[in-house]
Image (tube, rainbow, N blue to C red; front, side, top):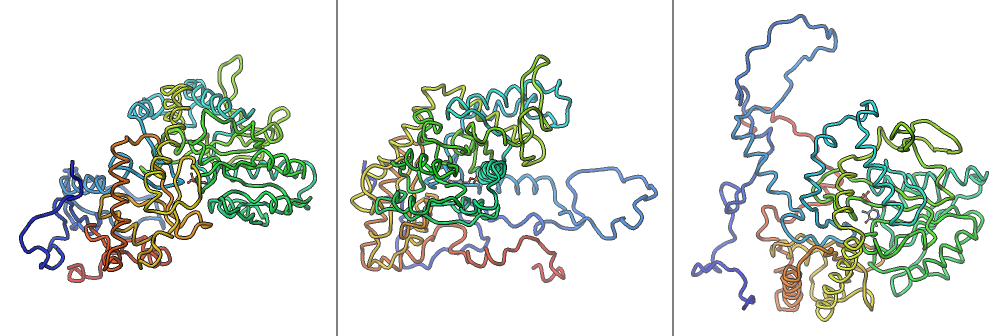
Length: 521
Ligand SMILES: *Cc1c(COP(=O)(O)O)cnc(C)c1O
């Protein structure tokens, strides 16, 4: 099969024509979609409702003075609007998602089916517990399996995302330090330079001084530098393993022993747990607290814009400080503990209610349908796929570090040197080729970083097509005129280069009606 031709339109003399700009804003069958408010016409209605009876308002000063301001559309307009929007969502169901440090992986349909069961989907957290025994049992069983997989004695289920889990674990550490009467002295948290931004942010939020640990030339924590930073004022180290360079921290056991000897705690960022689940028990590494991104490791659709879920496993030293509520099983079945009981020293609540039920169901369905051997294999395949990508690209792109990687392959921009093409340009050209770009410029310790995480669920064929495309683009960067070609990408996307800085600094979050009808036209 000759793939080198690619897909071209063959109209004679096409090269001489200007770039395609359509009158409608549509690109072939990809429809441009204005905001629903922009499409509405005052007075248009999609349903026939009887006029509301006149009633005396009891709202007094709170009565609405103007229109509600809802968009007015016909039923087909509404259906098309939301259908088109749904088609714009590039996700794991549309194609390969190489975004590193995100693990948008296989999301089995079985999970979705389970999460939609009325007994899980249609219940309310304020229902009497005797009517939600099954849901509580599921939370309890999931907790059991998370503890079993990690080897940890306790788990807090309620955190709503990874970052929220970090907060949970660090507040538990803060509480343990307070209980020892060391709050005034332990003020520093050590965070490797390659850490995800949420790690230093979490430590800073709790009033800790963030002290960065440099990385070695092979992308791991500099053990000597770490030892020098230890002292009686250190509260904890926040370490990701495998780290954000996609590498296993070889000295992790030594790091754990040293921080414990110094009286501090070991927070492990477990966002990359999908590389080692079923193979490594974080408890054996000396971890005191670790969040598990259910939406990364146990299949729930991170990329689909759904909620996250970040349960935190805790060591014996921290278990007592776990937040409320938690589920226990007694002679009357399952119940929720919502206030301090026994020897527990809960630091309080992290959020309303009990956690993300739908995510718990998906994670549980994923675990049960995979089994212990399946979870282990998913981890192994994630690592295999990343190494396959790295091995097949290492002669044309530049891996940031030597040797094999874990679940993600990290490249730097040395292969672009002298071409006038940047990591961003390269990523934009990928969009024209139909690929969502990989994670760029992260981790910060690698120049022009490109972090590719294929996950375990990609087939050999889909990986090969992706790799062949990157090989092609890498070769294109070496050709004369390459800089112009890459700077102009993406050409085929409905939107070209956006002013991302302005979008971040001056986001327009609210639609305002145009002053006059004419202004709208
Ligand atoms: C995703 C991620 C987080 C944060 O998780 P969220 O669920 O997005 O809050 C933290 N650390 C690392 C390494 C991550 O990849």
